[in-house]
Length: 92
Image (cartoon, rainbow, N blue to C red; front, side, top):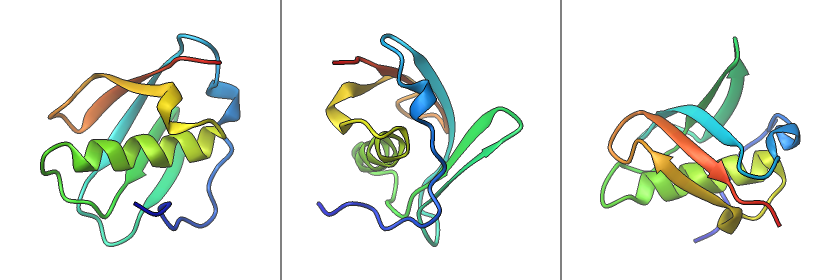
């Protein structure tokens, strides 16, 4: 799977602290992938449909790109089927 094509990605590298919990609001099946940081909430839109965890994987990759870390360092902790998700950063 290729990297999601996103422009103007905000720098969320300050969230890359070991064992940090990152809460995000997700919109699957969007017209284009995007990430924004508004009022303390990270909003992530992905074009992938929410089928079989594919959207969760796409969100993890977009979040990792914004944090400037490898996607393998992030794991979904809460919200497998919810639009509100919590990822945990397992730093190197």
